[in-house]
Length: 220
Image (cartoon, rainbow, N blue to C red):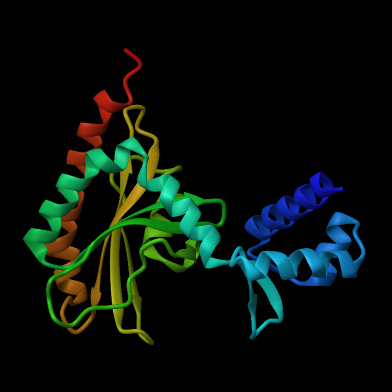
């Protein structure tokens, strides 16, 4: 009985991964479970911070504790350790926050951050999940699967007054494995500065990381 309950809970988590958010009725229909059982499982997952209720939609989505677990695993990935020095150098050059992110289905997850030392900062994206098509970091990962080279995406959020410019990091087989991006307030980084100065340094850093990764992924 306990094994079945665990399986049902894992199935709910997997559905929320695939669909971003779902209501109890939708989960009940998809899993062919009665609503009361789904609600009990959801209540337990919510208590543990593994799912949370979106008050605007009335639907459930993955919770912060689950994302933190993902983040703990991701931190151990070898490529991140190799990329760190180059990311730090980039942050020192431009003194703006630099991120590395990966694609997970329809979302992008920011797995590493080198924050700016300037007094005006923005909300951290570290360990957070966003819809891939809503961020430059996410879009560049999707585009790079079809295009060669170090493609670049730029995004300006007028509501939050934030600019993000992103490019791609590739492995030894030239497959895109992560995005590298700079996120800053628009009052400090103009579109012109992003497209000229930062773009050049961003691509140079991505190329450097890609070169470092080749021996790390070698099968020899």
